[in-house]
Amino acid sequence: MANSRRPLRFCLVGTGYWAPVTHAPALASAEGIEFAAVWGRDADAAARLAAQHGDLVPQHEQLGVLGGRRPAEQDQPAAEPDEDEVEQAEGHG
Image (tube, rainbow, N blue to C red; front, side, top):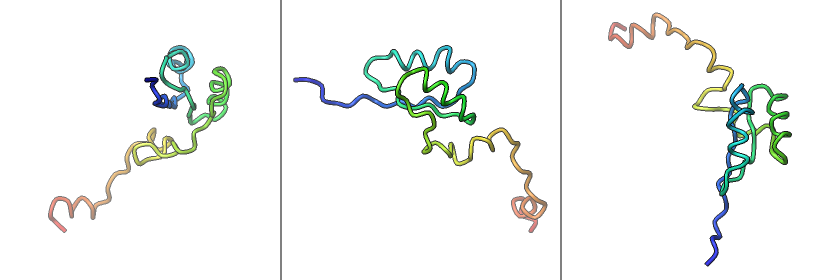
């Protein structure tokens, strides 16, 4: 009986140094998976990397929010709570 399962589809998240050097080539050459998309904050870098590996989607729009925050916000320090929030958390408010 032939295996009728569809291959797992992978989206490479990030276009930094290691993405074109190791991650994308590994995904492109792996058996049993489909290297389907590339996502990166730099849309041009994602498009270039996708073009290097054939018929990939250069920006996977469904990955606009990762872990509840937009990727650009992950580089920003968390906002400090205001005094009222601190007092309520400590039981003073």
